[in-house]
Length: 186
Length: 357
Image (cartoon, rainbow over all chains, first blue to last red; front, top):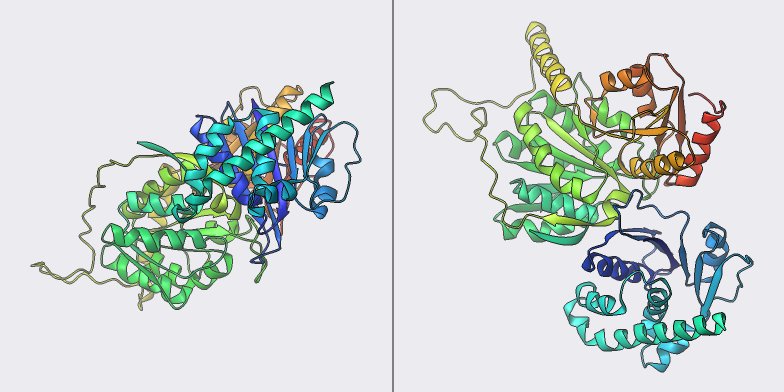
């Protein structure tokens, strides 16, 4: 198993914390992981991307340039990284924020209205975990339960009260992904 | 022993604490600020001192003072800050004071940017400041290696009474990887520093820390003694990692972050039937000239990959001595080479094309 995941968005959307959460979950399952962030000099609103590798074998290069999975949280990132995904790879798009469509026909593409879903759960800030739930469901890279456990490590103590809603977001994303996969296969 | 996910910058801090370093003097700069944050919190917990100085010039001179008094001491910065420290590093080398200096390289010249780079290779491996001196230069390529290397860095500094530079880049500093932390590691042995200026303590003579030699004959003697020390370091402290050099015909050479990319390139090239291998200098000075010369006798060519316009490639050329072609692939300004692009370069070279440096 080798997943090279690239998460791309603006600062403040949770792209980096989503990546860290995934890496922690991989570590907790005894897998080899790496996490490399790339961000601009701006405090908010600048580029915020990260590459996460989760593997059964030691990670050769932590630099993700040909992702197996791309998570797109804003319009510029779709244009910039769509071409880089490996043939047959997966793109997860936050369709609440991204208007563009994927041009390539050799990819699996799931649109997730993550902000609407998060608002329905009562907290728009958990949109990133709706997407992460879908990612985990579709790739099987780690178990949802492990991600939920990892929340305790990534969130500072004073935010632990937000763990239940984040867990709901993960589960919501996973359920949506399950439906999407079923619709695709039938 | 516990396994945790750690940032490279934090690993440097924890590695330093585990190596017995108790004094840090520095000034913040991206992309190494997490290191100063970490030590500001961690050093007081172990009875140490963290001080944010008013500048990099002040920091390095505080390092001079603490090192002169026999302490395990370090500072850290990135390109522009390391440039400001060069006068002090030259004084440390001249006075033969052990210390560890971390450079989390960023894009240059000038203010450049905060993105990762390897463009301070010449500065670190050729001395950097004025006068005739060398600094041992180490280049880790994983967060685990950073932790392990900090102890080695302090030990080498004490052993040779010489500044040691640990050189990485923004990727290494920000990257998170699992590390095995030895929580119950025994405190490192205190090295007896009979030369330190730490009070007479019943000694019959004064220990003086100095880099001033007014009489030319005396300075020449000092320069020759330093030269002998550097020769001993060159003979004993070469450190490298080789990967799949068995039967290799294209030998890649890379350090730090780019060596990780090149490892993936070697795997992909081999799976396409191209016999590629990788040499990773772990110490950049002393450089593995002899090892590369020996490899040159058995390969068709070299490809040096760096995040600069071509610096380590000159050391590789010196080792290869024109025996086989030495090619170069570089990205700079904060761009990190993509494995796919380096692989294309390997394929071009393998087919007999490609530009030589």
